[in-house]
Length: 155
Image 1 (tube, rainbow, N blue to C red):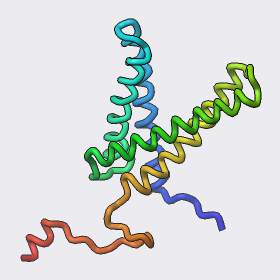
Image 2: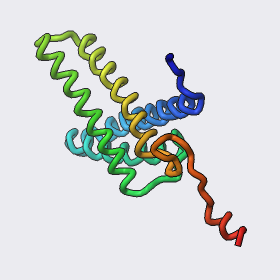
Image 3: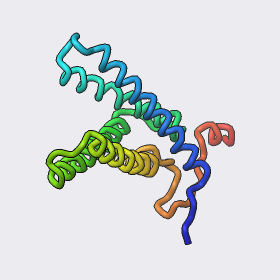
């Protein structure tokens, strides 16, 4: 039986797309602003690092409403970006191996399709691993957790 995703997952995915899309558009604008101020490769590297840090913060706080943070979260998120980059690059390399001179429309269709699949995969990994609720057990059940304030109040 096919099980549809829960509403919280759908809402988180919508927030993920909005945050990621917003950061992508801002990155594109920043790249235009930096054109001529520094070499394009340097500008792209700088914008990639800054946008990955910003997107990770937004995804944690807005998309997944998580309290997890720190450099470990940023490293895990950066690894998902690297995997997405490798996936989209492999898709384009496969296209060019199959068709040495594809049209711009075909190339963009392959790139955007690969980006969409990579984004869905990235969402799943960020949700299940990077920003996963720490109170979940391996079987998916919640374990009771007492907040420090609850323990203090009980004492």
